Structures are given as structure tokens and as C-alpha cells.
Image 1 (cartoon, rainbow, N blue to C red):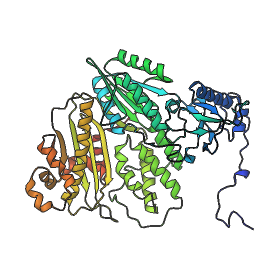
Image 2 (image 1 turned 180 degrees about the vertical axis):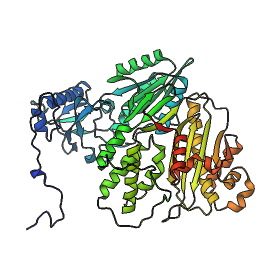
Image 3 (image 1 turned 90 degrees about the vertical axis):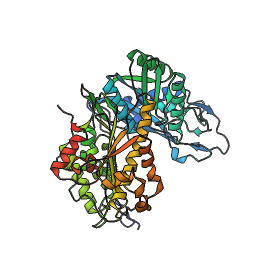
Image 4 (image 1 turned 60 degrees about the vertical axis):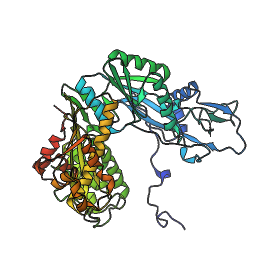
Length: 540
């Protein structure tokens, strides 16, 4: 007899799971249904499905045609979830008809699928400018955004379950618009939106394709697009309202008012600037890990810092990877954990017990700092200041170095990075010079972005490094003979210095803010640098 234990199946059998849906108390929200049949019997979910089907019909998403001989038909399914308010209460029931895009065939059902999304550094830069100039900031949400995209390929899909045309039950849907789940749906939506926004006078920036700018006389408007979430800010509230009205006329746009909750980030505005916090997301991660009431830690990583590949393998590698990936998104507003999370993510392919111990330490640190977030301070100028650092040969397994940098726009931290270098450096000067090249590239990109945002930069960017040899190499070609093993592509730093765009200066180690992005630090030093990186307690 072939049993589940003999073939190595230890998951619970779903046929014995307690999936019976008990009647909900009066006033309580209906549970998420386990099947379409159960959803059709529930009036709340049936109404949500009917609303979705009506939206598909109104948008002329498809045409019913006879099933072509030999055509590939993409099937689909209903997806149900509760749409919650920022406070966590139920807003509405949401049902969506989603096709199974993984069954599509390249060259037949789809071609190009890549679509850009706005970079986190771009979001922080725009918000820092809005805070400095005291501009209004508005958030928009596009309902059924992917349904607005036009398809170039011929795609057939089945009729939605529960809403099959009784007169033509054997017909299939020939898609004219994109559907959720299609591989090309995000690209089709972005092209549709970008084409319309250009008719309003907007121009896509070369630095970030998802950032659009409009200049009309002395007025400026910036528009950020992240899939179906839109943020608009500018110097004229009347011009912003005109743009919102035009977007409403073209798409199903909902005006969310002032920016408060964007991409899972709580946004709070004050005289100091914008406070960005992911407190609720951090608590959700702690709940998922079962560490909501764990003992707190003062720092996310000890002074030893680096991990090797020794130790027994973890029992649940999937859970380790899920938590490490969740922590990656938390670094959007928490540069203080960027280095520790980077160390954890280096070992996702083969996690060991020491790596799990570090992961738990990060969660213990987050437990005590869930209310901490990033403060984008309002500034009177838009000068760029950068700090770069490297920990030479810090990885005990590969002897590679770790590069780290942080970039300030005025008094606001807008960009940072903690990353292991791709090659082994033969000296500390080489490791620092590579880190300097990384921050120089980021600063050049940021200068170009600010130029496209019509923010003039008249001064050279100051890049601080605590290695004197690296400072000399950035300006002195005499050192070329001693550093001939360094690749030529990182010598572009010297060209930027000669062009007057960047000035590389020496800074003492105790004032090197990027240290927190390259190594573990003592508690007092870590907390001082954390404050310098604009990470503050957002609860006042």
C-alpha cells in the first residue's frame, strides 16, 4: 500500500480540514469563501462578483466569439479578499476575475512583459522637495487599472465561472483589454496611462520612467505612478485639481485626498517634513514569525557582524526565506536595518542556524522600534551630500568586501545601499574606491533627476570617505601605477571630479554615517548613527 508517509507527504490532507463555513454573526463580515459555489451562495460575495463582472462588461474587456479550431484558451479563476481601510476595518468585499497567465505561450499569447515602477529613492526625493516647498500632495487610486490596457496580441480566455452567457455557453472571450493575471497586463496598462498623460502635457523623465513632470508657466506638477497608485504634487492646487478631473474622465480614478497611506507606508506630514513609517507592516511581520512578544534587542546585529556558512541547516528554509523577503521591504523606511537584512539575504539559498539566529535578532530589534521611521526633513537648499564606506574582506567565506553609502538631499536622507562587492579587493583602498564609485554613480543619477525636476544644482556634490588613499585616487593620476589592477570602469570617479560635479573629501571614522551600512557597531555608536540617518520615533 502506498501511504502518504511512505512517499514523503507530511502536509495535512485538505479533505479532512475543517473548511465548513459557519454562519457569521449578524453584522460580522463574511469569511473568504473556499470555492466559487460558496461565494455565489453568500450575498456579500455574490454582489462583489456581480460588480466585477459589470465593470468588465462596461469596460468592453472582451467579445464573445465561437471557439476557434486549435486556438489556445487561457482559463481563469475568481480571487476573493477583504479590502481594508488604513485603520484595519473592513471597507468592502473584493472579488476579481483573474486569468492564469502561467498557461500563456511566449510568441503566441504574449510578447514583451516588462513594465517599470517608480524607484523608492525617486519617491523620497519628490516628497523631500514637496516638504521643502510646502506643496500639496494628493493620492489617487485607479480601480481595475489593468482593465484599461489595450492588448496587441490575440488572447482567448474562458467565460467567468458563474456568469456564463446562457445563450452561448460554448463561446470564448476574445480579449480587447488586458485582464489581471495576463503576463503583459502591467505593461499594457503602463503604456495606456503613459500615452494619455502625455496628451495632458506631461513628460516622462529619463531618470525614472514612472515619474512624469508638467511645467505650465511658473507652475510645476510631479506625478508618480506605482502600478495603480498615483501621487501628485505641485506648486498649484488648482492645476492639480484640473489634472485629477481629466484623469477621472478617462479612467476609474478615486481621489484619496492628502497622501496618508501609500504602498503600505504610513505618511504623516508636519512642519518638519514627512514622516514615513511601516509600523503596521512591522507588527504583521512579527506576528507572522510568532515573535510579537519577544525580548527586545538594542541593535539588529552584533559587532562581529559577518556570517559564514557553518552550522546545521535550518528546519524550515521556506519560512526563513519568507521572513527575509518581508524584511527587505521594511528597509524602504528603515536604513538602520539595511546591513543586517543584507547579511541575512546573502544566505537565502542555504540558510543555517547562525543565519536564523541573526534573523531572529533583527526581529527582536524591530520589536522595540516598530514606531521608528524615516523623517524627510524640509530643507532650504537642495545640495547633495554623500557618505561612502567599505568593510574590507569582511565576508569570511568569500573574502569580499561590503560597500555602503547614504545620500542626503539637503537634510533629508533619500538614498542608501548596503551590498557585497562582486569581486575580491586586494587592498582596503581598492575596496573603498569601489564603494566611492557606487555612490558617485548614485549621485550622478540624482543630479540628473533633480535637473529634470527643474531643481537647479549649482554646487558640486560632496562625497565623504574615511580612506585617504581612496580620496587621493579620485583626483591624483600618479597613483595609477600602484592601482593598475583596478578595473577602468570605476575610474569614472576621477572624470567626475575633474568635471567639477563631485568633490571627494576625507571624513573621520567616528563621523562616517555609512559605517552603519557596512558592519555591526556597538550600541552607543549605532544609536548615534541611526539618528544621523534620520531614523526617528514617529510617535510624538
